[in-house]
Image 1 (cartoon, rainbow, N blue to C red):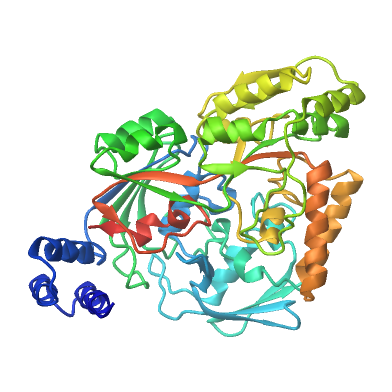
Image 2 (cartoon, rainbow, N blue to C red):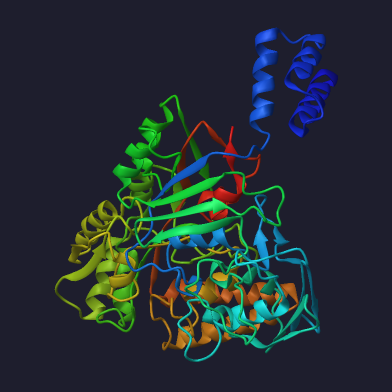
Length: 537
């Protein structure tokens, strides 16, 4: 034990640059370690030491030709990655999964969390040379407020009644009611802080109005985004690559080939069917993390026939979820239960029985619905790896209940702008959110443009919205738990979302790329901050 403690200490010195490789090897030899092992240990320790340099090439499974640099309208992992590469937020989720300040060096509540005060860092400049002030924060948040905003984050800031500044480096958010989760909310990728013009205006199309570790050089929607390191980045221990290139490679086979051939350093959204094959490749490592990512089949209640509650229940019972986990995820995840939150979030109700495949009950509800004829389900692998196959499995299981699902295979390109949130029923993925309120406010409350089920007008939906607002400001944890449990039950029983599977994040990367001991799971790709957090060994 003493020997191991000593060697860990020497390795820490090597990592910190306090001793060199030769000194570490000599220390290890003196401790009784044989030379080959000592050399290997030195290599491992040095690989764990962040180094600057090189160009990161990342093939991502997301992106579309309608993407823009406007963070408020971002709707996929490609533009989210762009945002986190070029910009910063008031707070962020760290690699260890904990919330921490980013552009805000500290924050605290007041008046029962109906007011939040953020103290800004004083050493931050935008890529255009402007110094960060409270005016920039206020202008950036006002983009998402107001009736005419096109922001996908509008619902997240609806509760913000007013935003004021107290000097150049303090911002005060006044809420309509208490919101204990607000510091989490402001880390949402849409809420990137941008430079203002002094009159409260922000040019959301500008490429140089952000503060992040990388300066955006080129943006080709649905194709690529390229970056160069920001030489004046305020985070001294981040953004190690000289350059970064993000490539939209929606086809899973093409992404796999790219990382196998060494054309890219990282490929995300790896199809579970190829994990075993890639894991045997000498120059490739597989990284798998468990978080809040889930695959869904949202039914829009404002498109017939999905306003029919009996039909929605029939379709929920007609899905063989475990078969889908076994055949699509190959065990790299678990079955969903038509609730978009799970046990990693506080106040989760694990007593709601898992909904299983029940063709007899599905047939009963289907008959009760009065519907007949095929029901169209739009799918594309742009939704998630294996979505087309998942749709076919769904149609096969539903057939056993006498339900005819017609699979409509959509083009990958344009899926998120032409199919999702528009057509009546489709395949979808959600990266999830760290808290229940954030997840609900992102996709399920009535005021949200991303409410892809249009679940707003039923009695259960109205009650759900009331309960979410109550829970948001409730300080008594027992009462708050009861409220969130009710919200989950309402979604489970009446909602339009079929949450089929909780899927692990799986990516493949060259062994030349490395990272620290912790990898965030709030989003794929280390919270979509690999460009900032990883380096070449």
